[in-house]
Length: 478
Picture: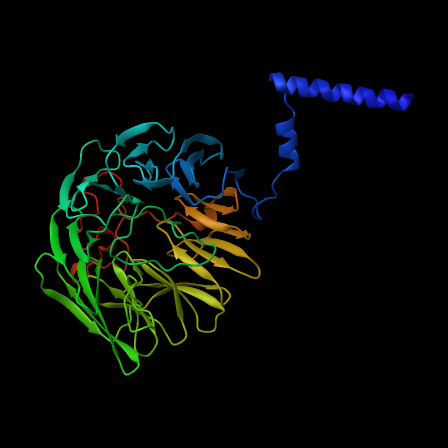
């Protein structure tokens, strides 16, 4: 009888709880489930905050004081300080443009023309477009393209938070169909590694020239003025690429069971040859008949090549100088306009070399599987056995943050980085011991060493024409 009374009391209590939950008076189940489903810390030491997002992120970007998380069918923003959700929007794609002080989030739907520009802190629409078929996002510029038909398109450039175009240009198409965010152009492809997201550095400054592939030709557009400088068709054995303000004609010829390469770099404004190199493999061709299906490896204004002796080299895209040549057995794992990070031949360390000099800036113990990425604010090194993520001052190698974690590095900002594993993301704040993080290109800081500007001048962060640096009176970000 007593057992029946207890069972009846439990059932009555459960019925009351269910009734209260159904009427919205009190619902203990979400909190109970959160307790059961509590996440383990994503790293050691623990992160500042850790949140579970609605789906596995496709990209994560730090945009000012917000963190923009792109998922399969929606995009959301979270507070960089607390991780709390700020807003959420249904969208099939998103991309962040602008710098630390003027970021915007472009969102859109697949197979639907147009996009919206949102404020990352509030989700409020700042500008709406109903006709664009493609969007390209940069730190100091946003480009979009709209087409009245397949062979009649208009390319427009915008300040990230501007309301009127800076310039417009006409192109005979931009591929075909609806292309969403950042469709491929003819430039360079980044070195990649496991556990570091390809977009960890966020938006980059717009290069001085862009190469749009249209119907087998490459149209070269000056991003400062919108002028179309060239309309070039590659030869049968050539691949065209626009790097460092030059149009590269990369020839690959099959002979004697191997591929022979030659590079001719031309000034798009005049058509005159600026430099040439032979015998350097830019890794554009596969092993079958030397057919070039890939852009050359590199970053911004530099290229990565392999000499006849098998040693890797970093080449200035503007004037063809050799900025770094690796030793026998060394492996380049990250590069930008300033630094080359390479794995030593003994596979026991990684080191950073200042481009254009003989200076090794720092060396760090690492395994033979360590990977790295360079961002404006930190060099990120990922290692295994044990699993580690380290954010380092790019110039000195001092530790900004070191984590024992199997998570991936997703985004790096001026004060910290976002790491993630599955649906869990967390924020790691850089420690004071790391010194002042580097200023990003175009943010008004001094040009980075090892620059690749005209005549070897030290203005690599400004682009070959100096158009990316602010005016002397201190222009806007980017």
